[in-house]
Length: 515
Image (cartoon, rainbow, N blue to C red; front, side, top):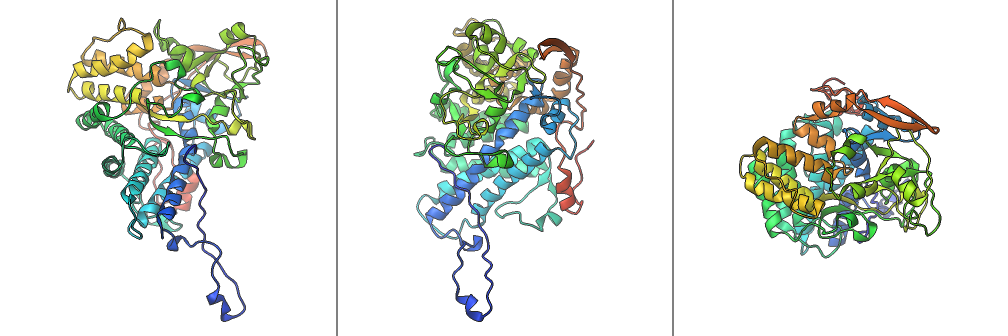
């Protein structure tokens, strides 16, 4: 991580083989995990390891868009990364490789966080509460991802899940897991500053924002409004004045960033261990296929990628006339080609659009594999998101439509550059305006599918695309394709537990309904 360098921590038991009793006097070469945590440095090293799995959430972000009505899977062909194609088509099964990755990587994050908490009382040092607060935030963050994706999941607190535990630990109701998230985030908010001395570390504001989101996902509108309005009033965050600069690599960790996943291009990566990459893998996947521009020309600002996660015409049309965010959020590649003379190749399900927020940009080190090591940070929680969550809580909770309008219109005034498009609606019309604003403000950032699910709109919105044709340009020919995804209520709100995980647990975990 930038400014918070991540070191993989491998704690192994040392096995010493000897032909005599002298082996009992041999000092092990490797650290025993039970004998760790003897200094502040040990706690900080373990905390760095817990942060590390944040970088693997690139997949969560990509698929959170592809599962929704915002984007299509794309790629090279209909069989390019089959697991991604399945989720796009809503035909994913318990054998889906990408879902198993999310399961495994998020549990790795939980385990690393719980490792710190398991030994929280072993050694004291000044500032220890801040270390534990960061660990508890990270645990809540990883569990939040697991609950969003899989619903009820196996649950452990302040101890690691080790081999064999899967036979005795059941799937825990998500309400119980949410309750622990709340406790963790309240502790984190109470023990962290709004501004950290080291960029990239969790702050009080990050804890408050995630707590507000956890409340919102449970329809606890009063609690959500309280914590989010406190952050708005007391925190150091604000909207970046110029939206067009928000996602550039030279404008990371800015005043709008409440929590940002740090990436770097200083280390190489390969397809054999995508979660090991210190770079943002999604950026390469989202990139324009075979992109080429004349050196130093106006188009010489992007690099090639794999053309996944391509925005639909429908989400482009969602932007109102005069909304200045469109050109920053979504790249119209045909218009860009006409303007700059660049060339590119057509991928599968080509719509003519790319997620401009997170595509490969010129200027990084291009450390190999260059498609996997892009340094673009992920803006996990932005202040605009905080404002819109507060607006939603105030409106849907029947607390104050006036304050909800105020927060919503702060976001819209930046988008349009004036107050002429401010929303004055109340009640359900205001709710719809907030939903619209979340879509266009946060498009491409991984929130859409889960927003649809938690508000009960997933079937309607996702299947609304079924009557829309989108253009796919294959081998120079224009082809019209019909999207006919089916969202099954009672099934598709969550994803299947990976079959291998159920089998490894002795088949004691019941699969999610419909899978």
